[in-house]
Image (cartoon, one colour):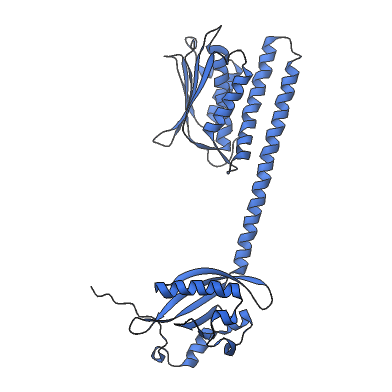
Length: 353
């Protein structure tokens, strides 16, 4: 196979009818154009080059960049020139420089080698386009995004703090209650608020402001629940079987509330008297992309005929409502203790909460 280099521009006058035509051609180009010889001396520059750097064509001719440009820009140009010269390939670069008006500008530059008829590099051509306006818009967007992220973090932080205040107020108020059922109602409400507060705390700590690693969240939630159930935590062990799965906030909040209700229910009813046991929370992603959340215990089990959708307790009603909210399905297995299995997919589009 013949290894022939494609035809390329050269300094040969045969390639253009006249030097005057070359001059007219490159002067008509609004981008900066310059042609250098093998020693990287500028041979031809166009009007855009002259206007950008405030240098006459006579002052540029035969000079290297080090002789006509600021030291930092000349060094950057020399580095990219050497890359093109040694590789024999075209490259795209971004450069910054100060114009004669003292304003720093951004350029996108394409540099390419020039070959003679024998395939030897005899110089190079460069074309630089002013992209200052584009880069300024990009920097403004990046700054706005950074500011937005800071504000969102602050919002999550404040929401978490406000929820903790509400939780503390409920805890204080519960001390004045006499009936045990009333105390339990306050404790359940406090735990629900904490489960949502943990979501905002995790988002505040996360690099992402819309997604959290749900396994870490469940661990924090269960640790908090164990503290809430002081009497039970010494004889009931809680264990996690979770993969590293990130959930969007609009899916994480209802799922967190579901876990809160089911784990609380297990701590309250699955181990009566002094019976001990284990509560396991699992979260895995199936091969079809569906998420599977399970809460199981090895306690006394549910009564015969139990139907979660017909249950009259507030906790179970809340679970079924939240399952519907995330378009999930829930099944109950009573073969060994109790297992709740929830299958769902992340909510897409408009939040429902």
